[in-house]
Image (tube, rainbow, N blue to C red):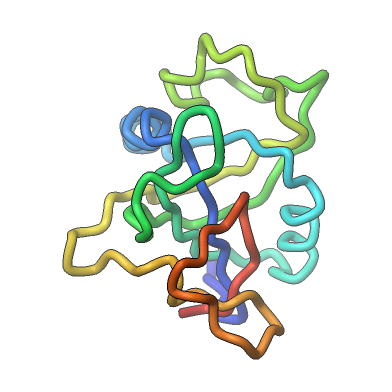
Length: 154
């Protein structure tokens, strides 16, 4: 599968799910995270035209999308999303991080990531260096996203 350079996704994932999700991705070939940002993932799927999309992930607090760090620490390739079934993942549970198996949260969609990896410290990217797609202004250095964003490819 080719990977688009037209845009990327900047997204929060609770840190425990990233650590557990890496194990899931290594074992199963992909990992699936939940989100309520169904409009964003629908838009991403429309403009990616079947290509993979680089996703830059910052660890967030377990109970919110607030960043733990002001840098992207994880990276993967977004492969698409699925609508939830009554708030739960409609696919095989083996693709969900083990840390999410007992999670009572419900989500609008589930987004699939392949090749999830933690970036070396030298390759971590400040969140403020990302720009919303089709917006001219740079993000403020204190920029703290509240949920996933479609961004210009860095």
